[in-house]
Image: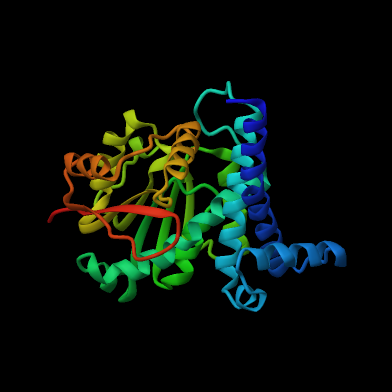
Amino acid sequence: MKPEDLFALVQRLNGPMEALGALAAELRIQTEGLSPDPAVQRALDAVIAALGIELPALAALPRDAKLAAAGGIAAFLRQAADVVEHPEREPGWAFTDGAFLQNQGRMSMSIAHVVATLAPSLGDLASRLDGGPATFLDVGTGVGWLAIAMANRFPGLRVLGLDVHDTALRIGRQNVRDAALEGRIELRHGNVTELAERDAFDLAFVAAPFLSKDIVPLALQRTRDALRPGGILLFGTFATIDDPLATATQALRIVRSGGHPWALLDACAEVSAAGFARAHVVERTWKAPIALIAAEKAD
């Protein structure tokens, strides 16, 4: 490679990266009521138009969707910057900045919509969630946005969110208070491998990108034990477009976070080995960047 080839590559990749930043900025303007300088706003509008997005259509989207997208973009850009700044850092979750943790967490809000879409196809999960009191275990809850989104989506649901990150839990508990859901959501410090509950939950979501490969077997076994008979596991990881570069950068992000970039069929086999029944890769009918393995605790 010649130096000019390297500079040309940087220039080609820079445009999409800055466009992502502009899109996140516009989403924040719409959801937070920010007022940029008119010249900056016109320049942002031009970027949004170049992306093929009509501003009225963007404005009409649900606020939660815009918050999740803006948070996801900000989190991805921050993690990309961390690779530049600290390529020598050991794998593991090293972020303590509150704004970043909030952005990272907001990405998970869209999972509640995916759960509502999938529930009718997963045993009797829909009737459990819609028909009365039900319980949800959120493993890797972070700042609690999935727990909050699930409680809002299913009014009878009670939620236990589990995490080992003290800063995220502190922020999450404030998020729960702000959402007036303290009576239905508990955020607990704890490792899923030490989970003591038995036959207690109707649904569990396990955030695979933040679990090291060596603890996944025990984490799945403890989650299985915590589910009621017929309860559903959703083992979730990031999804991306079918593109080698996107796949490689996603794997880098997961490894840097301390997780394992599972091939979906390998993850499915891991879930089956933990004693779950009917483990399968869920066909994606949604655009949220999440891929799921679903399984059931046998009666």
